Structures are given as structure tokens and as C-alpha cells.
Image 1 (tube, one colour):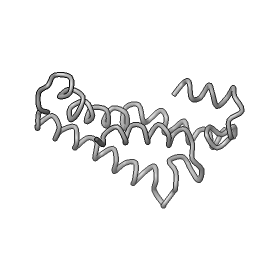
Image 2 (cartoon, rainbow, N blue to C red):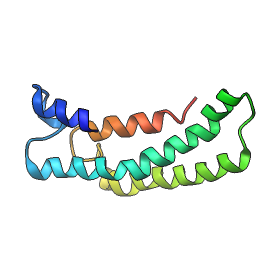
Image 3 (cartoon, rainbow, N blue to C red):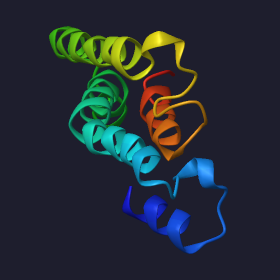
Image 4 (cartoon, helix red, strand yellow):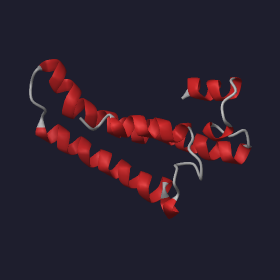
Length: 113
């Protein structure tokens, strides 16, 4: 998150990625702060339990761990749809794509194999 903010501020990046307007930037920042303990936590925990730990240990995934982490991840995905994309918003922080969408896509896509 820090490096993306830095690059957007210091380089000539199109404004929609991290808006200079304080109110628009605050919407992006709101998601970026929330995602650490929700999207990232719950999607990566599912990824770890379902794919990474079994790949490293050579043992099958533990069904109870996968089920529990899946439940948390589904709750997160529902929040994304019901809160962040409410009202048919095309992007998490408004009407244009931003770094919030990039980070969310990275977290969600890792859960697919």
C-alpha cells in the first residue's frame, strides 16, 4: 500500500489511480485501510489453508480449517459487494478504477487455483 501511494504521488500517474482531490483520495484510503484486516486477512488465510500449506507439507488440506476460512472469506466478499460496490458502483472507491481495486483483485484472485 505504501509503495503504491508513493508511486502515485511522486510519478506522473493518471489521477484516477490515487486521486489528488482529498475527498476522492479519502474514499480510496478508506478501502486501503480496511482491506488489511479484512480482504487481505480472510482471503490469504483461505489461500494458506486450502493451497499453500498443503503444497509445502505434502499433506491434504484440513477440511475444518478450509471450511472455517472459507466462511470468513465469503463474509468478506459479501461485504465487498454489499458495502464497497453498493448501488452498482463499478469500482470500490467510486466511478473510476483505483489502486484499491488493484489490491482487492490481487487478494481475491489468489484464492482461485
